[in-house]
Image 1 (cartoon, one colour):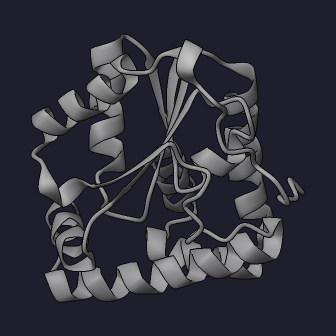
Image 2 (cartoon, rainbow, N blue to C red):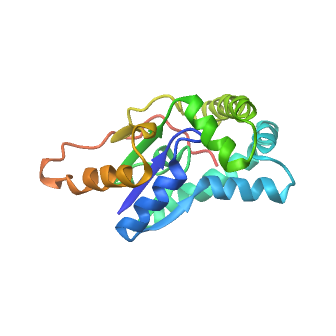
Length: 192
């Protein structure tokens, strides 16, 4: 089984993807962790690295190629990144989108990164605008198009444990006999 988890910064992707993987006995791969490692290697914050990536397309392409390769060659995995649903092409069994109001996401990021909420919100908005521009330019992906996802959730509505229960219930309720087809990934240029 391949499950993808996507969403904007602070939406609970990492926490919930890790919890879901643990509950289902699957591996977990985080694109955010890989991106942050790449930023740290260059002595940059994720926001600085995002803006640097606007000038050096190879950064995104390297990360995205790796995530695409993982999605298309591995099973028994929860793959989590902003583009995981798109990069998995038609290999994903389930594609989830997580979101929350930007004020909530900024609070989560501020707590995680020990910074003021207003700074986290401003950085998050800059980061999202930067990524949206790059995804459209590189791969013709409209990150605001949620039509490829099997389910989209506002993670601010549940605590982490009850939300994992919701995700597991969604997967458990799946019956291949009644499946009329997942949304295809069309029009994307995987130009890595």
